[in-house]
Length: 174
Image (cartoon, rainbow, N blue to C red; front, top):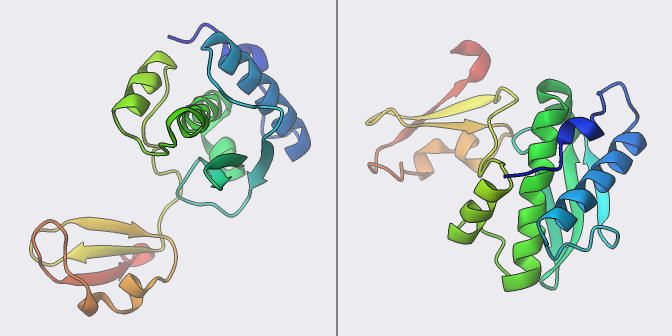
């Protein structure tokens, strides 16, 4: 369980992106130090995404090395600092596991560390999708935020759960 209090590092969405990233870095260093994570916080680039709609954060890496931690501003605005601090811990686990085992997945080691660092394995939806792709047989629903091939050509795809066909509904029409 984390003892570095995210509350101590709290910032509000009224801050600038630069201020937000400065606090995120300092908080990340404290968490990495507390949990002995092999995370080169100062060597990583830290960025804000104002476009992401379905992820709260991400780690970009090249040649099996973490390069950049990206944090989603919209998630911070909607969910607040405590949720973003959990996302920072989540991304630190990814960096640690990439550094240690070249494993960017949400597998067993990730889940174990997520429990230790008191963070989520997957982020909650924080933006409404533009479309819902719905299986006509089993009713499975897939949220889509961009006009992908699945949205434009649903007849070319089948449901992974039951093999059924899909139909597409605009989210504002459901």
